[in-house]
Image 1: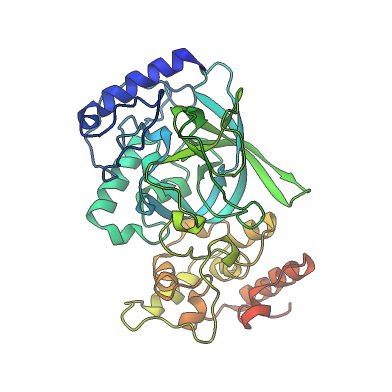
Image 2: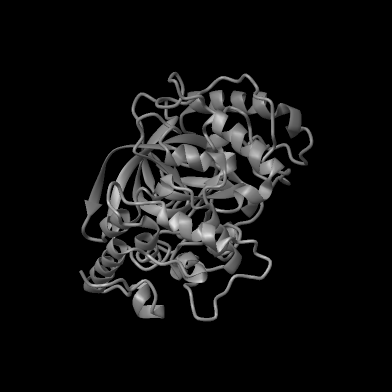
Length: 407
């Protein structure tokens, strides 16, 4: 089998971290022989950090980054990326890397503990698997808040981990961080290849740091950024169908769903995704019949203030409107980033509360009758025109909203 020195170290770490809970499992598999399907325990589990060795190469161990060596589940460390429930995912909104489809190169000088993974660079609603949070302080803060106040973590950017990713403090110097999202789900449908009976080395990319330049690929209108993903040796599932489990000397970006991989990929998370296209598991766009539930508790004056208070740099363009006009209808990287980037730094809590209550995407301004300023209307008109030129259909042409005005 592969990389015996790493696997020996990994067995030792997993044993030290999880020995107190493993005795409750009804199977005796170590993850490297024959594999039963263990019964998962509730997760996330608030825990007192256990002093365990960190076996990962750079940029994780031996740096200022405080690696999460607490075992979030009974199935392995944070870098095993274990899923036990859709409730394990917390929604964020902002710049992220999607490594879900990646085929990765094992890094030199890391004892096979880290791989270099080419990932999609994107912006929008994304999800952090709390069991895969590689930062110990972030994991502890997020588990504490989301356990004591679950509703606060059910809307995008409500969980502490989202703020750390968005403000650039999760990893010093990283351009972005790898999370999960449904971007490219239309072009590259999410599948599943079960490798639980063929365990091996895989890359757990959740919250891995991404460095270097983002490189456009004109062939498919995407942009790639490279991320460092820690490796784990055990059972896993690949997010694509029909692939070979044995990818040596490469590694698949993968995870381990300890319960059951849902037949509908949208069921990986709770409910439809706000501010995402419908063909990417997104909630539907606004229609004339879309309304806020009477008991939603949404304050529309606050919603409109959030739109009005978040400008693009030193301009008067209100980012919430231009982002709503693009992110649910366009896959053009530069257009979406130009219309949205910076919005993640603003308070959007009431906007997301409204969209979550009405179960619609890019729709809070319509629900609450918010009005963009003159400069923003021109910007909306411009991004709509850019979508039409690219063969896309802006929201204006679908429901008659966010049409802007000519310059």
